Image (cartoon, rainbow, N blue to C red; front, side, top):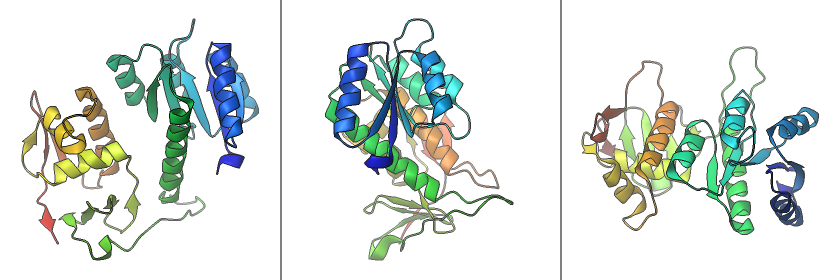
Length: 253
């Protein structure tokens, strides 16, 4: 995967651009660099990257504004970097489409791990796309459901809590990030109960997690989109000023 993968690094600090670029190239990636969003778009016009590492704090057009301008079909995944590292910036970045968010200064090895995780996730998501009429068919990934493990079933959906898999009614694997899966499992294991954000964090990540409650809102929003059904059934209900409730009946089989 790495040898054919192009990473675009966008940062106004030349030293950081060189550091990240050199490290990624030593690990088999092809890199391009840009000092600001305008240069980023010029680079992208010549060759589309597979992933963008985008700094938040830049003079002129900042990274969050640049991220909004990228939100079109086929946009490469984006990992945000920020020297501020505030919850608000992180939440906004995730809400408007960033795949991940790291505070600066970051360990290049951690950034490398995040990049590989995001790219693997995008590959799985691409493999599960079902084409509309007139489109070239792509593979729909299915797996033996559960492989003998007990499943949590709600309607025609199945959650394999031990196998870390969610299966759609047609048997296709629904791609979830690790955080999304943990929140999904917490909701499904406590159906028809209102769970506060703190409870979701506790169930999903443990009490010692370094978390912020608005991140749960972002994950729930993404889970809802992936659970969307033609009949518009609301599987996750927002309870104002309280939290979230999983509304479906759940059977363990």
